[in-house]
Image 1 (tube, rainbow, N blue to C red):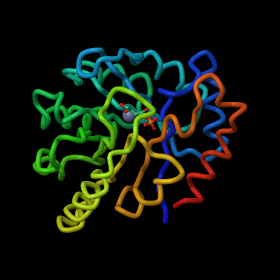
Image 2: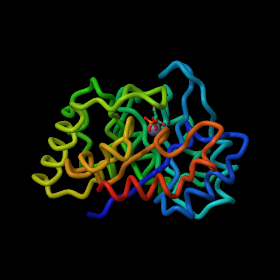
Image 3: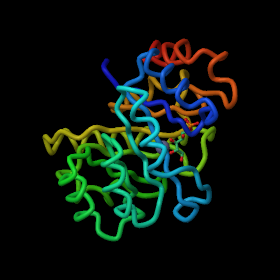
Length: 222
Ligand code: DX5
Ligand code: ZN
C-alpha cells in the first residue's frame, strides 16, 4: 500500500534542525511537517514562517505547513514566498474558508483543510471539491506526544467513503499520536499520509535514536 510519511519537527532538536531534516530525507520521509502555533488558537507558541525560510535551502523534501493560528490567511503569502508546498489551516480558525482556499489556489500551494477531533466531518463536506487534502487531527492540536484518539479511525473511514462516493481526488492526512504500532490501522482505514512527531524524534536525542530505523519500522507496519 502506498502512503506518505511526514515527520513533524515539533519534536525535533531545534538546535540541530538542519541535521534532523537531512536525516529524515535520507530515511525516506515524504516531506517535513511544520506546526505553526500562535498561542491563541492553541496555547503554545512554536515558530513562524521564518523557520520555513531556514529549512527550504537544506532539503528537497516537500514542506507541509500546519497552521494552528487564528485568521490563518494572514500568513499565506509569506509562507508561499518562503517555499511552503502545502498549507493546512483549521476549519475552526478561518472566517471565510472558501476565500481562504481560493487564495491558496491562487498562490499555487496545495490546499488542505484541518479538522479537530471534536469537529464532525460534515463541517468540511461543503468544501471537499475545493481542497487537495483534509488533515484529520487524531489528538487535540497543540502538543506532541499525546495518545491517538481511537474514534479517529471511524472518522477517517467515513471521510474516505465520502471521497469515493463523490469520485473526487482528495488526500487524507492524519496527525497525532501515530507510531509503529498504530500506523497500519490508520492507513488501512483510508489515510494517504501520516504525520509522526514524537515517534520519529526523541527530543535532544533523535540522531543517536536513529531516525531511519524508526521510519522504516513505521513503514514495516503498513
Ligand atoms: C500537534 C501537531 C502534531 C504533532 C504530532 O498539534 O499538529 O503535528 O507534532 O506529534 P505526535 O506525533 O507526537 O503526536
Ligand atoms: Zn501537525
